Length: 339
Image (cartoon, rainbow, N blue to C red; front, side, top):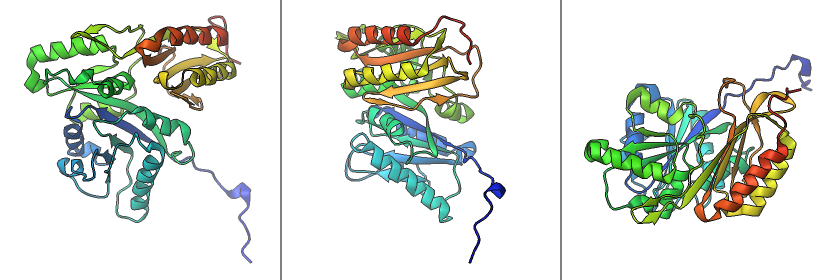
């Protein structure tokens, strides 16, 4: 009979988490070109890619000019239709390829969505299925913006959702658009109130754009602005949170807020200080889903503490009022020390 090992002799090892960047953007905005550029870099050799296409025949994986087991193709629709199951299966297939020896272990993953995909369900997948996706963590939602066209395609509801939810927006096709096109693109993006606008880079800078720590929260409230005779479909509110927050009270209020506003709470994210732990905490919510809070170890004391909510413009008044009440109700006087 084989004796079980002495538990005292066992050493638990924490498995390193794998950052996942979701790359979104409207049809033709340059997502596949960025992925091809990324995979050509020696410093990105340890990157796996999941490509999702709209249609029954997948072609984008051929356009990235690299076909091996580090690329998983999900044709036949968009990931937003069955995000949780499809995402888990795709990541599992990559893990199985590594275990079978057909794929070198990877340190990061890029998920390229269909140009018609609403990215919110993908964000929800990471919030709602922590066990199946436990080895993976969402690093960022990055959107591409085509600066060349003048047809106003960014006014499409899906395009605006992709831009509004993004942590960083990369301007593409600047070589075609020229200086005037870039200036016009910046005006359009500013009017939409999107975050982290940068020209798409090359080399090491591209890797950083896709995987580096996110820029500070926008410390401004964005209202819908006129845009070519139309209005932005989304607005946002950023609230500074300088004091310490009762985390359990905040989460209870956030659950109630997500339940009350449902689909209108497109995304909420924040970094706060809490009353019973010296570490800052990251909070996230997408529509009805509220994530478990995550304690952050590596963050500078001077980094902003704030909560940002993104929502359809027509629902703005109610969500603004609820968010301000939520922060006030859970807050403590500024400077209250952690336990």
